[in-house]
Length: 590
Image (cartoon, rainbow, N blue to C red; front, side, top):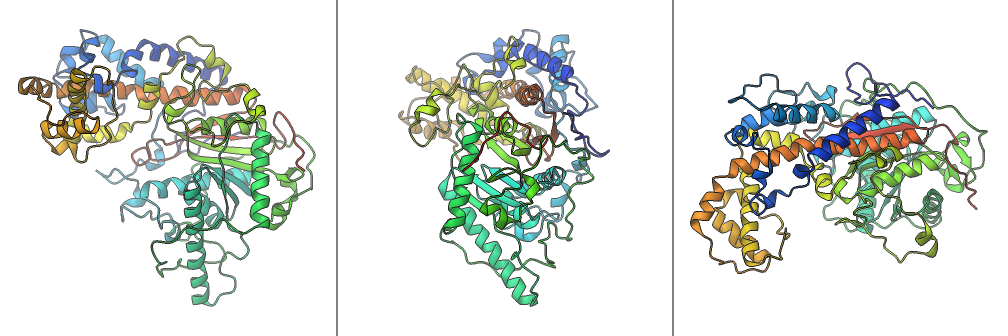
């Protein structure tokens, strides 16, 4: 089924022109390139000295890279858009080809709409007047929300609203909802019926508390204006559910989880809110009509200039008019309900961690009730693979597995598609996937500013040598962040770090050896930059694999660089629509 998600003129839709064959060819190119340079992407920078990483580089690369200044590293290696490249020496063709190929294979990360930022500013135009408050988001949605999240919930919320309009859905399920910032914007700002699922009970309580604060602020404004039409009386509050989405469970279990939780919320009291640390300050929402404004100017623009979602999926079966009790209360239209007790909905996940994004995509493909999805991924290192089914940081199921769960076939977070799974060299190590989570734009800024923060990688690599001198079995020990490490002399940094791994803080350090390693700081930064150059390439392969998976299951999709990467490094959203009833099965919920 073809769904037109083409962009308007001012938005770069990075995958809109790729056919299915081109996607497969790109995947082949990505796996070939990454397997060739896996030594770089798989390396740990803290082992720069212990593994002599510098001398693992091609011998022709070493002399031209070791004398680069920090700004030159940014301009000549990492910045694909830098036009005036002036090389201090002649670079070998293999190095030039490495850089050019890495940039060519990675999906473009810039959202063209954000390129008109103020000169020297690392933030979008919406933060020019106030660096902590978006001028495009109403103040009622900015409370408790950092600038990065303000930017994300506004843009993703508008896109979700468009998908709801094009699929005739008014219902959204937000998975991994955290403190409910996106949920509140979708519900109170865009007037959608939203169910939010979050595994952390504490965050669910916080989200419920913040909902209460917003409602009280609206009620105060209603009384202040003495306007009976003001307030959310006609719009139910979002439903916050404390629940863990099991990646091993089928989509039927996910639907049953939603139905059970919503019935409990309908029949019983709402999720209790936690104690408020601050009293609600009295500023009320400005110039509110019967709809909550989404921007300080009162605009409810749904990014129509950004996305053209003009083609609606075809209906594949007769609609059912049966609705559950919560649907009637929410005002869900009868045509949205495809099975008794389960209306159609759009699925969204803002930075759904690890396998959660893959799980939501599988539910979208298989479940006939999910009409659209917007998937923003993060934490690629927590994705399960056949080689590493239990990566560090993996969220385990909270209860012992049932026999039914144990009998389910294992489905890993990567690769998802049969095509990528069949390519030689498709494997991605934990370190390669962890590197794909790094913020390239932020590191480029540090290089151009010649920031003192750049010395921290060298410090940690130096400390690793002294740790292994004393404890050869203690490899890559977790030290955690040492506050303002870049401002400390190495001896003080080492004293603090050694104590954190249980070694004597006064361990003797050879001054000449320390000095010799400090002189190699530029080499450490260069090597880290080479690995960072591969990070967008790894991310491209992971996300392309998901697009091919959708295509293999009859669903077209697009990958949109929705957020400004300077503010939100994981800025891609995978967008897909599906015809009513399209899926691999049906379920009758009692």
